[in-house]
Length: 116
Image (cartoon, rainbow, N blue to C red; front, side, top):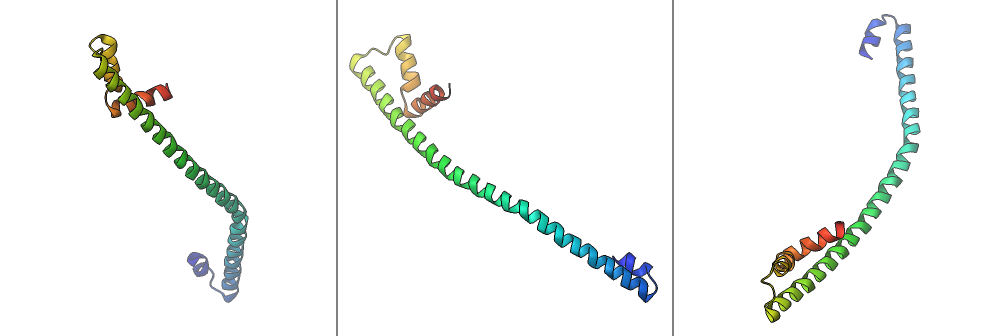
């Protein structure tokens, strides 16, 4: 803009440069109005994604809670079975204790079973 202003030496040249500058500003404003139409669609899309993420978080909480409940049940069942029968000395019993002997191992085994 400054180069355009400096290159014109007469007042008519400066007026033409100012008109050109004003036209560029008007074109920018029209371009912003054109983009605003797409920004509204983008805003609606982002709001939809945020709403979907909220639902996904609550679904994940329910799944984790169910995994934990079943992990506790399976761990308690394996500990009761091995404690009452003393049957966990063979390979199957050792594998059972290894997979479901502790809650963290039970959760991992259940997660692996769920995700294949």
